[in-house]
Image 1 (spheres, rainbow, N blue to C red):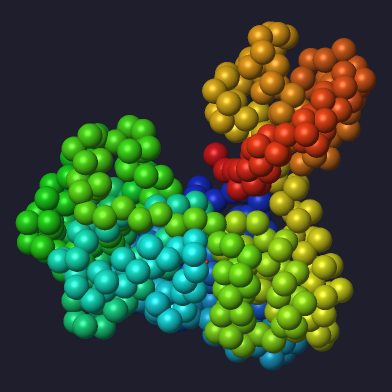
Image 2: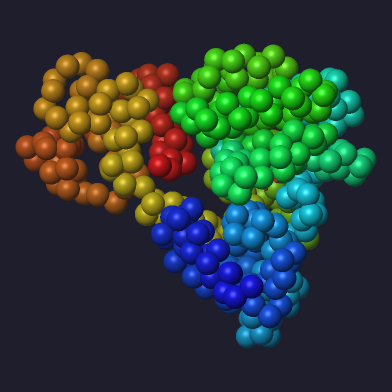
Length: 439
Ligand code: ADP
Ligand code: MG
């Protein structure tokens, strides 16, 4: 395995933002001698980086190894000696992967909190785990980022795998890469064997099939054959099948044919229950007031809860401080700041123009038509609120005379916010979208 680890990290570089790569991945060292085709080991300099990488990237790293070597190893992120001396954290964080699937063993029903926001998806997933291939086939789960779609789908996978069923979990990307590799190696039989003969196929984030006709065709045949054999199919997506642009009608209609269940952002009580659950799993002790605080600060993304808990835990260990409310507020301040630094005006313009159906170039133009002025004002307001740009900077950016024009715009929007409840909700939604926006 001559430096295959570094090659994989190079591939990973293309998958994630430069910032993330430099901040986390760059700190990894590949341990060639301790790695094999089935298990690879990297060293991280501290517990924070280790747990972060494990959570966020170990699945991807494993996938990338599979692309390079055709087997997907389990990925260990160990702490380097220096780090182990300074923290008492367990020195091995490990994701187990069986040879056939990349299911995360902690994605179980037991570890999933059901609440009003996800009850329907939860209940249907549960019944699919009891009666696969019969109850709802396919089961199509959709909802926003980090709301538990992958968790729920894999919970079904874990139940069925434990009952001896062959379960394949894949992303569209992996399906595509596999397909390309097998076409190149003239080994399509193996591809078909893998995807068409399994008992359960879990395919994650199907929206990425859009505008890829050849792979849609292949997936269509996979789907048909699985359905004909009463094998269970579970699909997730960020949108309802109808809403996925660039997807063949025959796929849309088949996706809708089974059961379509959505997951909504969690309400406050569910967020609190999820935090309690995560604390229990990770043996972190938090006071009620800290839990409530974290729950109110986190907007919609449950994944962020985990990020914050692991940060809190790591910091408190590194700094030998208990997790008080004060301490939490400080840690969260950094987190919010970091989020802000990632937002720029271009993103805001792209998003606002998409949401309000105008062109990005129109937002920056001097066009005075009503809907464009409206979109422009909102973009300026969000830019002022969510980025560190000053009013003169914004004036320059949006081609306005000077900062008084920006200030005038801010006033208009603030008046609307005060008097129009619907508008306020709309702006809040846009803010969340900007914060979760990625290209
Ligand atoms: P998605 O696939 O919808 O983007 P994930 O399934 O990856 O989201 O969930 C993100 C993280 O949040 C996972 O670690 C998952 O365990 C956790 N999570 C999401 N919803 C819940 C829930 N209802 N109960 C417990 N954990 C959850
Ligand atoms: Mg997911």
